[in-house]
Image 1: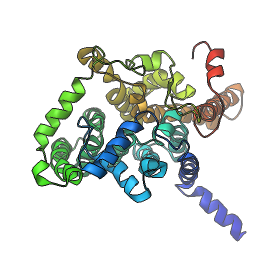
Image 2: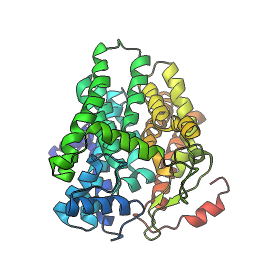
Image 3: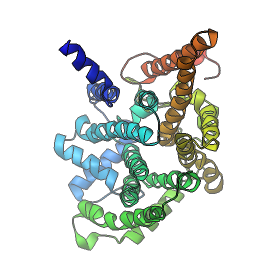
Length: 403
């Protein structure tokens, strides 16, 4: 009986399912971290720059801020110039992002069940898993973005602003946390605290001020240090110069193409590191956004935040692409995946509510079947697409016309 009570208590523990998912994904990451033992896709740019920082104390990638590159430097110094050194901190930050996502869902008023479903969808989503596995900058800015979201929901606006600044210091795209938080603050039904304005002030201040010691960590010479304003001008200038009109790359794609056509981006062939949104996430992305807007109109906290998140990290790219012609890639969709998983969990949770409330009848078992089917398709997508298993996905894409 004592064992049974202990097991029941463990099962009912708030973070039981979260712990299992974190352990499972962490084990898979570390199982494949050294396979392949060579650089993949843009890893060659960032790891090459990290090694240049270590050897010559200078950066080759002036278009990017310093923080994300310094994490790769730290990994190489800890574990050496090998896959563990390149990718270790990406895995750690990717795991932290899963934990932060669960906390965010709970802070937005989602039940433990719905938050666990949302976290399951995110943890076992292919694009999320692949980006969390590689030595690229995106995983770092997304983790800080999620930290900013969580801190914002706690009303810790100054800390949230610092987290936004750190996200932008990892990669400029981290600034996309601003619109999401701002939209939620403007439209939330709760009394709006004016302390939120500190977020708007602290974020750029943290970005500028923290850039100085981070850049110094690279050059290690005060005479070589460039002032933050000139650094920002250089980053923006170099970034804006990369346009579709002047850039040739087989992986280029416009934002609207990411959801209108299913076109995976192969990072590596065997094992197949494929930048591809999971089939289930891709198919339900736009319906899920529409559902979150519906929930937002009905004053649902999670629906509002999810819709704002989707807008600020995806929809905003469409006019930006048209106006600036700035190049974009499929993996730019990576920070949006969490918003879709949140919205999908809201929908699945509503179906489960119908199941629990109806004593009997066809509808009761139909909605349960829909929930199980979507979760199984999502898990099957992960098994097929993720580099953990050697399942070839190309034949499947040929069999399914709409993919």
